[in-house]
Amino acid sequence: MVIATVAHETQREPQATHRLHISEAAFRSLVLAIYHVSVRERDICSPRRLLTVVLNAPENPIFQLEGTLLSRLCDSNIVAGRLQISVRIDSAVNDQLRLFREHAERRLSRPVSVAEAVYACSYVANLERLT
Image 1 (tube, rainbow, N blue to C red):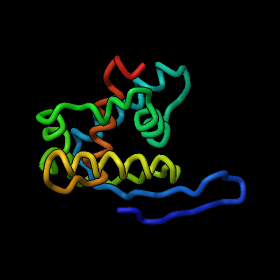
Image 2: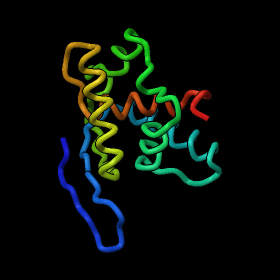
Image 3: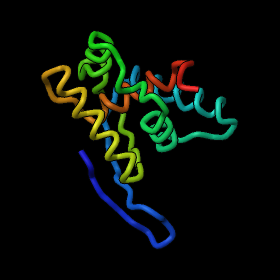
């Protein structure tokens, strides 16, 4: 769920903020993915940067996940939890996130939450082929 879209005078593009409730396993995956992207880019990464890297990656590996893996990653029983995080992303990246969610929903024949999509992005960021 998008909580807010904001634009500041110093920003080039509006941003969307997602407030998520995720599990400890999903949080660990997100932190590990942030670490891997930080090491690859030799710069400190944030959740915003992580999603930008994954959703704008050449060859779109997030869209190429096989059905059984996609089903495991987009599983609310694994992803949903009591840890609260907020992720702010650029609107263009939010559009890519929405496209991935729609893609996953078509393949799985069920809704896919933002938290599940972020978890899938974390998985892809942890793969070596993203480099």
